[in-house]
Length: 277
Image (cartoon, rainbow, N blue to C red):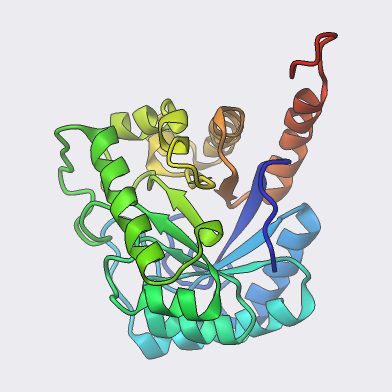
């Protein structure tokens, strides 16, 4: 299923089929709960549903291949068969990705940028799927243990350039590559805001850009109340959209869908000389 970039910012709805994700762990754990949530994301305005069976929050433990398979596969199959929008599999394991693609997924969302599993690029190429190449420093278990950079932006850019070259050399089409600078994955609070303030820098790579900041610690550390994260999430995602993000990955689809109506209206209005207003 093809993705259309450039007309609007696409909303990727998060569906964590896990008991321990940082925000919604356990809420959608189990096939029936997950499928019900998928329908709700679709109804709320999601353009993509991103399904994951292993938490990648800071400090998270890995789960076995069989456990992750059992969590995600029944949900992917049901969603792909019954909901007419692209399905993404959030995994860094090639075996999970391949099974998901067989069941109808069309996007691999790889937090490792092809670094954790040498077979992943070949799977994406063989199935002609889209692939999200994300930057991460370390792994989920240790990534937030004092992350440091000599030059934050250049190091992330270089990592993504290398991942992109690996993807292309493995046979993945350039039109199938999406990049993600990895908000919260081996970054300090200040690092995350620097990335958001430099979305244009990463857009120079020439690929669609995904931003995933929904309710993360760059927001949570500003507030005492969990629910207060929603408003800042919408604000930062709106800024990301204006700066050029092609996809935003969120928990709260309906709220972003409504907020983005005004952004699309703003983009559609032109001044008398034809420039975007």
